[in-house]
Length: 399
Ligand code: HEM
Image (cartoon, rainbow, N blue to C red):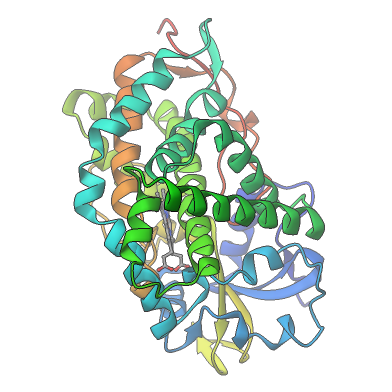
């Protein structure tokens, strides 16, 4: 009997559960995206490594005939993400030209120098926790912290930050219609055009100003700059929001690991192990087969859409004790930030801010515990990034 193609998402099932079923099916698996659009997903370490080879797979939607010949309709909800012209959707020279400019503004040294500012943001949020012992950590901390960090860095005023988060949620949620997603995208790009104008008029001590300075020769057009702000600011919060949510659940359900982290100040190792154990990027969008190609014995036709599974750190072929969360693991070759030309531009920032957030939270509330059964936690209706929608915790539970 032929197996039915798995739908991503599958109605009535959490995204993590659907990914578990996909992973069990094989190393390269055909799937059906919203609207019945066919795609493939690589799940094993070996298969993902091949998909990340830019000689075999392109990031450019131009390589996917179905997106241009009417096969996939104009109102396909995921088009807002596949069709936007930013560096994560480009190859070769085009990609390098864009990445070079942002890299001049967003240097590792600049990120390291941000530590005191990031600590202050975390401390302020913790000081402002709602009163009462039981709070929702997603709305009080794991969401506003990365949003505030990336927005402050790029000079986005506080007042607009919740709106940016809402637009992002609409864009990436698989419950949004094509029209809602396109409108959210248009509003965000409109806002980034205003931000660029305001920073041209009044330069500040922020990365939007630094980006404009790095583009002094006007190599990048205004549209390219807006798309750049879009990818950096969206990728710069959405991923970390969910990594932190997943980390809180994992630490609360692994008290001995959490105790070790606290006693030995091992928060950098917690972050590294979390990236392997339960990354927030569950499905990385989108690549296209440059020609007919065989990956892990499975033939993928030229032009096919291909995703890769972000939970690849759980591949037991690569990591024999993959299912165990252990901060003594040294699996630094995990692929949570990708590999090759598109390796995560924000990895140093993601590591720094996650370490600060978790260290501060658990040092301040060493008895913090989940106020619900972990099995009852609801996860976001999203197929690309994922984490808890709400995280009811007790800040000072008696143990
Ligand atoms: C836990 C946090 C994060 C995770 C797990 C993560 C993961 C990833 C992954 C897997 C990719 C490569 C996708 C692919 O090749 O298919 C990527 C690219 C990227 N990430 Fe991150 N990311 C995180 C945080 C951040 C932050 C804080 C920023 C802020 C600047 C950021 C900005 C970017 C950008 C701009 C790209 C595209 C790079 C390019 O195309 O050259 N990410 N990220």
